[in-house]
Length: 217
Image 1 (cartoon, rainbow, N blue to C red):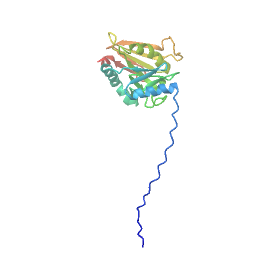
Image 2: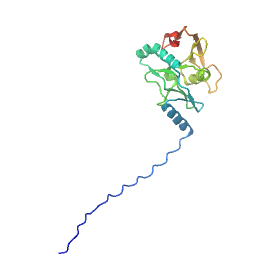
Image 3: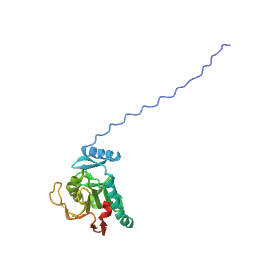
């Protein structure tokens, strides 16, 4: 009887199908590229704003400036709790008609403000925005942002200026409704400036007098 050599049968798995190549991403248009760059910078911890279609990276707030923001928030905190308001420090105000936006040092809104998108709210959806001046931002805070915020419909713009001697707090209210992008008119009809230590009245819906000495410390 012939001997039969039994050989182990080895089977090989069928090769996995090669996935089809992913379709190339569609190129972003210029506006989308600007928004994406701005979003990436903000995610990385920078303060990136859009002005006249250009991304502007602002310096971080220094500790004295951050303390002033915190002190003002303390003064307004009882109103926040009573009314269910929100305090924001990294949310932008959309500035029409372009895709511009500004990120104030402090923004006060209702619990559900009218949003432009997940990064920005409409100016008319804010209750107040605040900027603390520094030597590097003072010109922008005084000469560019009033027009931007008024065009957006921000009802109250508060400028805390520790750079002047003596320091001042200025409240701009009643924004002009028909401002152009390059308008040379005063963008807010009412302006009240007080020196540190003098009270500053915030109109409704706040209805309080701020102790400015508490803000400047």
